[in-house]
Image (cartoon, rainbow, N blue to C red; front, side, top):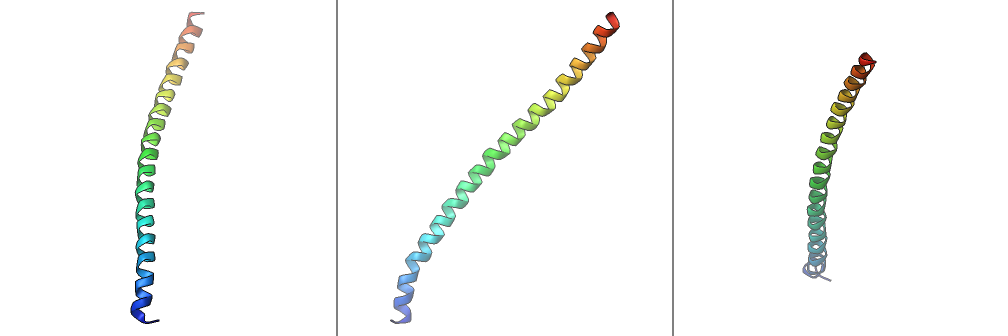
Length: 67
């Protein structure tokens, strides 16, 4: 088998492998984007929960003073 024949055999395999790698990279970028959005949403909810807990604590103190 000549070098050109070997290259002709390897070229489609390399091309397919790179195509799969490109597709996986695109999918990973999508996943990272989704996770980033979810992380931002989770962070927002946690911050709001801290605010609500603080307000509840203030209300409990106010109720205690009224008693």
